[in-house]
Image (cartoon, rainbow, N blue to C red; front, side, top):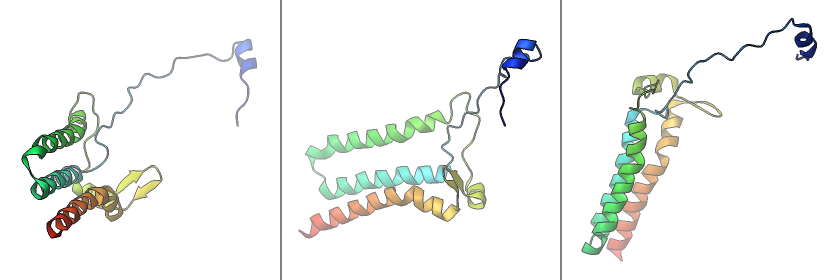
Length: 139
């Protein structure tokens, strides 16, 4: 229950002090194991490789290289963040992840469910590339 402290201030019974100076804990590891991060990157590179193999011609070399550079930048910059000075945390190990799962905004997620949630999009992108290349080969 809260109450007004104006009367304590006016009588001189209360004192005002500065807030404690504690450095905030910094977590740049995104809370996922390195293996899932690497698998996600591998799936996106597999997509580029499948599309290059299926639709490869000299005119598409530059766009494929640009896509690969974007993947490297998009996943490389956050990987560099984890190694910056002041990062207080380490990525989860696969063993700890298998024991505890992962904490999300809505609560703890079981390891299997977390793995499915993290890898569903990259795997679907690879399957989409397989389907596109198969359709193009058959038509």
